[in-house]
Image (cartoon, rainbow, N blue to C red; front, top):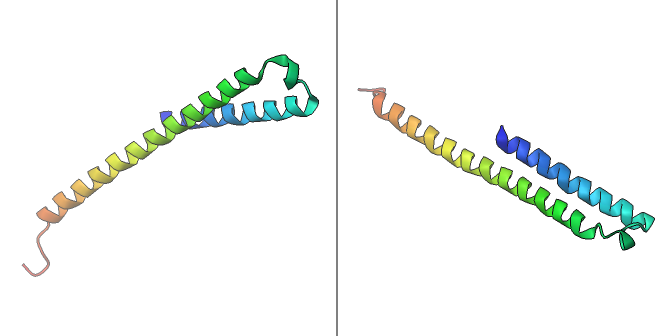
Length: 84
């Protein structure tokens, strides 16, 4: 659940900074405003949140895969074979 929120927040920050950059560039307001570094920082933070959330999901998936493999191995070892 936390990874989903991080990825959503990061994506929104990335899209929001990109949209703001496009609108300010198209209107000519970006040149004298000094907002470029702030928009770049916002995009970088969004990318960081998106990446951190994705890494958490990947780690969770690997952990779940190992747990399921262990359960299958235990059940297979405990189950008698069909001709025995």
